[in-house]
Image: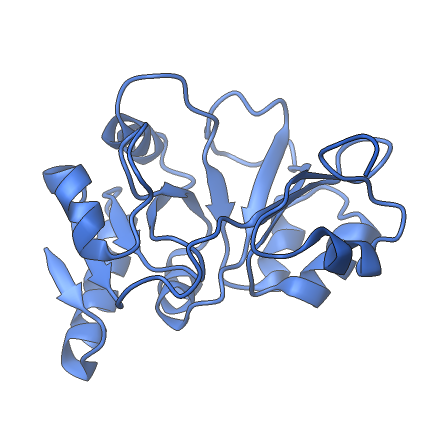
Length: 216
């Protein structure tokens, strides 16, 4: 079902329906500050499998994880690097994905991650309302593999159909660029993808960071 979150009544009903769906292990599509995303409870393995199945056959990277609070990051990581805290303070909520080592005690299965997780706190009020009630959500862009990223919930529904229980429409994405990705798991912090946040702004926070090109 699609809810138009640009109206107050539909927004309240839609957010409530999305929260219930996630807690029941079903999939939802919701707006973020970049493109629309498809999400599932990160701690429900069959929900994460359903997310991957909805995207379609083919090689897929493990989903990232969306959180509704900077403090949630502390619960996902065994020892949070200072750089991760600095980046979250500077750019969250926002279009920055941070890759860190997750706590080995976490009872989740989001795929072959090698003990690391890509985490982001999106800058969108609808997404944040949902996430603050559901907790961490496994997340990917709301489109079939090989198809364009959805800029509206309606575009996502055209691709994903009945695989998703709830669609939350909030209008066209303001910034269709993907998030920038910073990897903090190696000896040297590295930008893996330059997206909505320019490399120079990230380097202002982490001066010794290197870019996707080793010569950056």
